[in-house]
Structure formats: C-alpha cells, structure tokens
Image 1 (cartoon, one colour):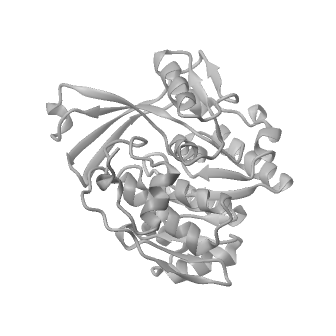
Image 2: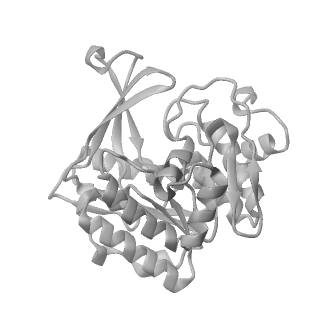
Length: 318
C-alpha cells in the first residue's frame, strides 16, 4: 500500500429533505468515515490505499466492507466481531451550511479495536500512514492502538499525516488537548482546521499556529482556512495557497477529508509542499459541490484539469 489508514466507518442515514430531523420520514443510506473517505479519495486518484478497522457481524458491517472494497481500497486487515454492532449516525441538514449529526456509536464494534490486532508489517510497508484524532477518542484501547501504529510508522520510516478532525461529542477538552498534541508532535504533516489549530496551540494566526506545532515536533503544518485556502510551513518555506472558487456549495461535509486525500496524493507524486497544498485545495473545492461524503471525490484527471485552470467538476461533461 502507498497509504494505510485506520478508524471507525459508520452507516450514515441522511434525510431526503432539508427540514428538522423530527419531520423527516425518509432516509438514504450512505457509508461515512473520515479515514475511508481519504482512502477512497486516494484510490479514485490512482493510488493504492488500505484501511483497517473492526465491524459488527451485521448487515451494516457487511455493507461497509463491501462498499469500501468496491471502491478499490484494501480491507484485508479489517476484523469482524459479534460482540458489538456497527456504528450508525444520522445527519440533519436544514440548509447547505447548517448541519447537525447524531451519533449512535457508543460501544460500537470499532471501539473494541485492540493494539495487539495491529499488523506492524501492514503499517510499516506503507509510504504514508494517515491518522485522525477521531480514532483515539473512541476508547482507551483505540488510543493505545493509535500510538502503537505511530510507533510502527516511526520504526519503519513511514511518513505520518495527522488530521486532528476533532469530534467534540467524543472528547473532553483537557483530554483532547493532551492526546492530540502528543500525536501532532510525532507527525510529519499536521493538517488542522483554523479552530482546531487555535485549540491545540492557543494561537490565533495561521503562522503562529504553525510555528507552535513545528516547535512541538511536527515536521510541517498545514492550516486549512476554508474558502481562503490553506497556510503551510515546514520551518524553511511558508505561505498561503488560495482556495478555488466554488460555484455551488452543496454539502460541506467531507471537504477536509477531500483536502487530506488531495494533499497526500501530491506528496505521493513527489510534489513540493505548496503544490501538495494546492492539490488538496482543489480536491476540497470539488467535494463540496456534491452531496455525500465520497460521491464527490474526483479522479486524478479531474483534479489535474482544475489545477491547470480548466473546468471544475460541475462543468465537466461526461
């Protein structure tokens, strides 16, 4: 695998219309998880990616495994358990930019992942390990697994890309601050959003946030600024790559995962830091124009076309 990632993927039940959830009668079933979003995005762009997790021995677990595998992601290290169900969550969308989610994931199958289930060879054989801050929040055992994966990556020279991806419904602030900063200090690339960066460092400006993360041990920091693009620094070069115009904002969920997939794709292609950030911005701008977590993830050709100044996804005739 070029990239390995791990964490909980759930079934998302999305309403069939934009009204408060109590007035919704129909739902559409989707697969959603930050780590599988990134893995699928990379597979769409022609890379080899693997994902490991634990799923319930139930219809939702089978659906997720088949879905992720069907998108070209290796699932050979995914485990199945009869001890707990696959997690689910519901999305409430009142407008394109007003979204609330309701999780039913406590004591789910993924929260039972154990560090002794980790394949060191699987992690060590990858060029990049993608880690989010969601997995260590699931349970103490998942936290131990996360640090074991980081240790394996360090041992084998696998680069670490860390997206804090803070889920406040899973953390208390003190614990999140401590654990996520510990992970960031071990990462080669840290990709926080602006608010996440402010929380992790206590700083308010992208340059200050990056400087603090670098001083703590990170190899490079990329601060996502939404429509304004992203600020980057590795201690030698720094700057801001502007975002790409979005004609129609349809669904902002998944934009950060799209950015991570595009950024990692740039690294795998040997691009320098600014170019990889620009590629991440391009993918993120495409993703928000399509409803769903993975439905808008583009092929490499579409990204290259946008980077070259061509049409966006909404203008491409297929």
